Image (spheres, helix red, strand yellow):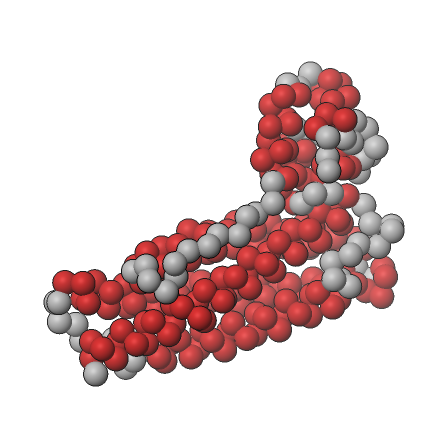
Length: 242
């Protein structure tokens, strides 16, 4: 457990990539000053230690799992939750982690059995698939599900979507979920369960921690859609359109 100011720059930045971003924001070199106490690094720069620690503590806080009555809340509430909780997180984290992995793979790609090069390749494929996947959900699938939900509530008649049935895009989303799950498994295997090697610097450890957090979030994202949103949307369409 990090003890606030009595921790080094390296202690903080090893927590996750968000902590690296905070340290970089204040011009602290987490490579050269990894063994320097955070209070000393702040003192040397005339920084407000309390303000820096507040940001670091917020950044280091683990992303807590969110539970909900996904079987009974409205589908509009459920799609809103997925967008706010999971889609917005991915839109922020995917490009930031990509930028860091680009640099790491360029500088150290062939080290340790080309671990970073292999990880980078799988991650890039996952990022590209997920960004397109989010777009399709937000622009095509979720609006139709929300219209069905509104129609069920108001009794206003609604016609079939242009793609015939909501089950068609759902099947595509399910296949893409399987592909994302496979990519997560590959990344976990490449990184040896996200356990950094002894030589790993704070940046390396932070990226591994953030990738493991992303894995947990994405698996929960997939579970909520596969087990609740998609089956409920298909059943509602059946009830509305026959």
